[in-house]
Image (cartoon, rainbow, N blue to C red; front, side, top):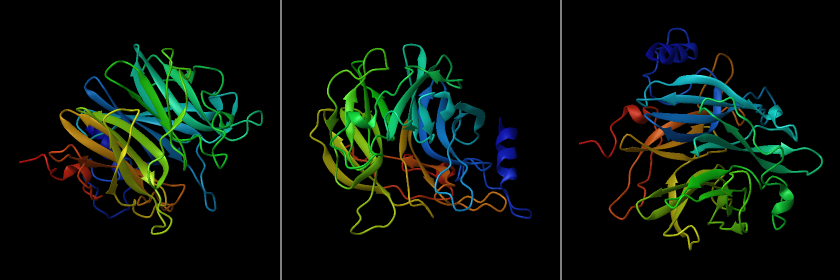
Amino acid sequence: MRRLALTLLLAATPVGAEAPSPGSNPIIRDRFTADPAPVVIGDRLWLYTGHDEAGEGEMFNMREWLAYSTTDMQTWTYHGPIMKVADFAWASKDAWAAQVVAKGGRYWLYAAVEHDATKPGKAIAVAVSDRPEGPFTDAKGAALISNDMTPKGTHSWEDIDPTVFTDDDGTTWIAWGNRQCYIARLGADMVSIDGPIREITPPHFEEGPWLHKRGGLYYLTYASLDRATHTDERVFYATATSLDGPWTYRGELTGSGEGSFTIHPGIAEFKGRWYLFLHNAALTIGERNGALGRRAVTVEHLSYDAQGLMRPVTQTAAGVTALSDADP
C-alpha cells in the first residue's frame, strides 16, 4: 500500500522536486479529483470522488466516479472507476458530486447527473453494489429526484450534490441543492422518497451540503457564496437538535480552496479523530494546471469546542501530517 502511495506522489512530482510526504495535500496527485465523500466501513475509510478531466477552455468534464481507501490517513489505495454516468441509461452527462452509504449489507451511491430530454435539468440518481469498491449499477432505472419535483426552484441545476445520512433510529435522510437546500426521508428500499420534500436553506447556501451528527447535535455543512462580499465559495455550517430544525447558523468553518471557485465539504470520524475533506485547484500534473474543472481533494483535521461547535479550520499543504488540536 505504501509503495502505491509513493508511486502516486512521484507521478505528479516535477523532475528535480522533492516528493511530498504521504498524506499531505492534495492527497491524490496522479489525477484531478473533486467533491470528496468519505465513509467509514470497518477498519477502512473509503473516499469517493468525482473525476475532473476538463481540457483547455472547458468548465467541467466529468464522466465517472472514483474510489480510494485508507487505514492510516497517510496512504491511499486506488480502486479505480466504480461507475460511469453512461451506466444510467436515462442520464445524458455530468458525473457530478456523489456520496456512498452502507445500509442493509449493501452500498448505495447517490449522485448528481444531467437528465435526458424527457425531464430536462439536473437530477439525483441512485446505484447499488454488494461491495464498497463496486461496481455499482443503477438501482432504480429512473431518477430518484428530478427537477420537476422541486418546482419552487429558480434554475435547472438546483437538484445536485446529494448528502445521505442514517440517524440513530435507522431512518435515512437525503439533503441536496444549489441555492435552495432540500431535505427528505428515504424509503426503507433506499430508492424512493418517503414523505414531503422540505426546504431548509441556511444563509449564503450555494451547494454541496453535508449532514453528520455528533452527540445530540446535527450539523449541516455546505459550500457558501455571499455574493456581496466574496467571489469564491467558502464552507459555512448550521446546527440543530433535530433534522426538523430549526437550524442555527454558525458561520464560516473554512475559507475558499486555493485557486478554486468551488469547494465541497465531506466530514467523517475515523479511529477516534474527525476529518474535513475539501478540494482546491492547487495541483499540477505535467503541463496541466489546476482550474475550475481540474480540482484536487484535500483533508484537514477537524475538532470541536466544549459546546460542540466546530472550530475554524485553516487549509494547509501539510494536511493531516501536521499535529491536530486533539494531539497533546
